[in-house]
Image (cartoon, rainbow, N blue to C red):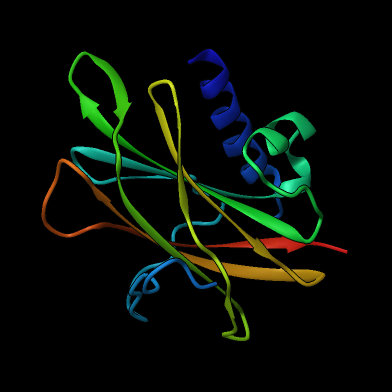
Length: 166
């Protein structure tokens, strides 16, 4: 659990240091009125749940972490990492499973191929996907997460990150 928390902390920290598709199934629905998260944001509160999200170049991962999860390290690939946490009174928030869909587009409106898969490590649950970038490119990510133990409107975020590949 400590290693998992450390990996998530490194991913979130790395995403804050970065200058700031198509998933399996249908892309996440995003309307033009959906607000963009503030630059550098890495989480959003939804009442009973918190959605954590990060997008970092895969070459910032250690070779061991990348290899253990089948992720290609490259300056031209970006890793999206999403976690759903359920708030519990008097205890740390707990990761919960769910359905996560994500899409990415560049500022020219070109969709990027992005599919998300679940990774479980002890009690930790992550949803990760990686996407190719071309040189210097800004991506807008749209994420919808539906916790398995909840009904109703999915947790939805839209955020932009700038990347500098080769």
